[in-house]
Length: 171
Image (cartoon, rainbow, N blue to C red; front, side):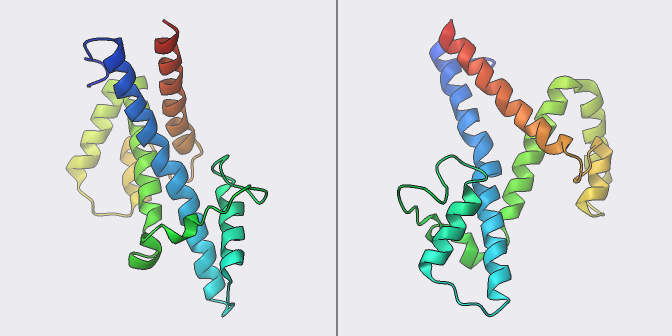
């Protein structure tokens, strides 16, 4: 809303940049953190002791699938595995952030493409209440957690925002 009603180009750019900064964070950063966390828990379950260097290598390898800033050949140690307090305070909780961001972006995508249909489906979901597992409830809005369109739709939104930003800078 703020982007669409911005009074001028600098404000439009600002609001769009904020959307772009927030959108991928929940998907990509929390994505690699969730996957790393699961890998660490799986290793702990085998009674294997991991050194800091081994955890760093796992972090670099895993995060490189989500970001260009990581990788086995990274020039610097990130030590990013030390930062996520959720690893220790709320184990396996990061995955909730991934799903919530992907769903929010996908909802936005459907709202833009099929506004009336999505509104009707979403209202049915809300009126039903939350009395079933997520995969069952998401059928109200025509979604399936196993469907690649879920992530594709979220990425489509991020791509469209980047294109809009490029257009604003070019005009």
